[in-house]
Length: 130
Image (cartoon, rainbow, N blue to C red; front, top):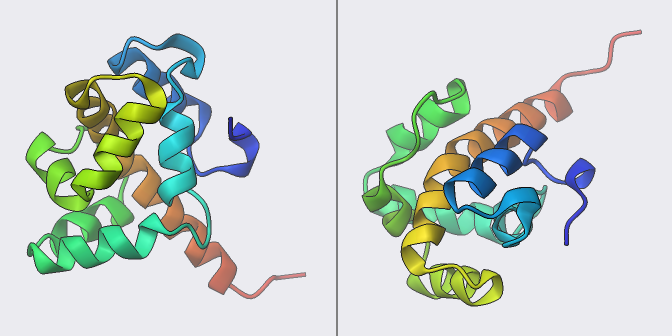
């Protein structure tokens, strides 16, 4: 399981996905799986999600998530668009969650992950002030 301090999924988002999927303390592993896929610098899912968003005309949606913390979860239809079916199936298989529970869990955490990834990228671009 991924250490929370090494991913872009803060405790509150881990808690949210666990609540939504009824897997307290990340027993399901969904938070860890999504963190591995797109919650770390250089994660393979980041360019895949961006590409799929662009192809579906969802660039503005991702930009909105980058700009501000979303107070609402993603739409389930958007989750299905952003994540390849094989990845959704992989998450379900790895976690033992139903496909619907995976989509619900992702909908609650993906906007926050996109926001945190954007903020971390901005921090890396800023010159350090002494």
